[in-house]
Image (tube, rainbow, N blue to C red; front, side, top):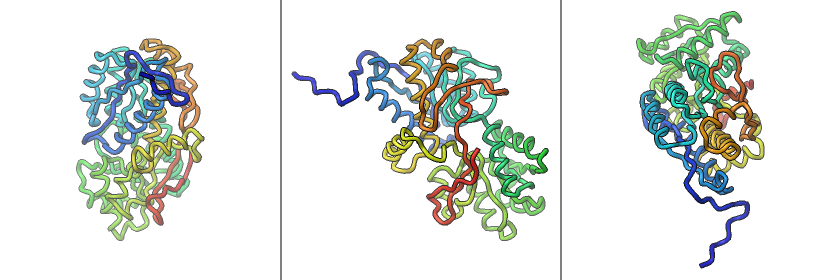
Length: 370
């Protein structure tokens, strides 16, 4: 029997697969849409790696575990994936889950390339085992604070829920804005109903309200309450954590979804590689890919390069972080140790402040770049 010819550029992938463990929030309370985009990027890159011959002739395989953004589930998934013999870990969107995963990966000696979580202290102590593609929270949120100041906002209210991530965000904003004449007023969303937020904004003469809260609730209810309050017609609502990035935001809020600036990690213009990947991701997702989908793709691109060059030995993968130079969808990816960051960090991915255009909520406007 004749074997059909391989497609151009492809080599046979035989032998046992090389496995990468993928941590993704695919159920609530995780941000499911972010998880779906992250997984789409991871899967697309794995398919392309295998179409090009895999890892030195061995197929690359993704072993996916749903963290649901729950730290205990993330840590348990790392333990299971380590036992299964994965060569490395990839993914995670939520900082609280990524922090738990990073701690376990560090303890077990399992390389972890974190795709999307931004919390500065991803591990308590410096580690050689963990690297990260997303920018550290301090870096991104200071760029967001610059945008607020340039837009004339100095009295800024933050509607904040209780978590290490939101507390860190509020602290970054306060520390950066205070020496520059800005005031941060914290509204505790454990104690306030969305409608009560409006009275607090009026009483405190805030000109901007930042949503440091979960999606879809209470973020959606807060936006609706503020938009309906005639006293707050001039207030700017912002969402540095990126809630308006995903289609669900526009579906739930309609016209109210627009003009809410958020951070996203894309360049002004994609490279030819980025443009090609965007087209493939759009087909896979049946909608425009978010920056999170590009983070997923770039994660596998980096790990595949390391595994081809250094084999599947976990220690050799971790030792290679500082020597990596991989062309990603958003620029060349290299890792270093910026001050105050406990992991190997891509410093820095492109950062934009964007919003949905009120005239066309499916279109994004770039307001500020850092």
